[in-house]
Length: 193
Image 1 (cartoon, rainbow, N blue to C red):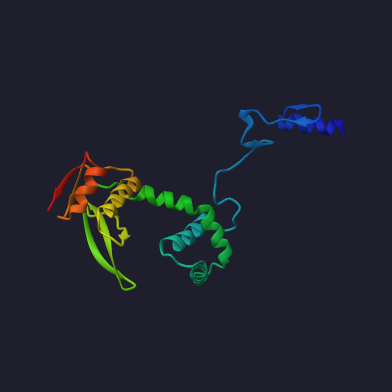
Image 2: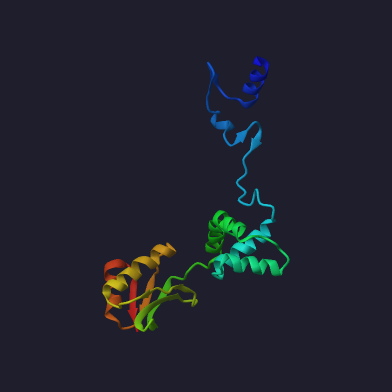
């Protein structure tokens, strides 16, 4: 018994003192008895990463239910349960979202802001739309009012989500834009047309 425990102790590189097991040294962290821990999020699943990525893409991009994704995969001959798709999206969804953010084009330095009207359940709402000079849509929030407080909320949210401040913004003649721009983005050029 003593020979067996000595062998374990020496192979694990753990410090012991009177039967107490200590932590491994910083050089040995991430490995256990010579095995390294993988950062692969697809490890442990029986399906290849391509199928997992396709299922997660269907679930998140097209807002399909888990059962509809299960049916779509079944049509292609891939038998998987909706519980597995849920696990895949929980484990790999953040990786997929980060990949999409990296692929998103960098916004231009000139933003065009305008508003529109939409009816939701019989009530009139306003959507604020921001596009850059290449006509890439930056954001379209829907709000119930179009006063200065709503414009300030839009001006706070837009650069925070993009992590980028424009050189200039172009808006229509609505006074709320000018009030919000003076308060939130004072260094940005503003042109009303």
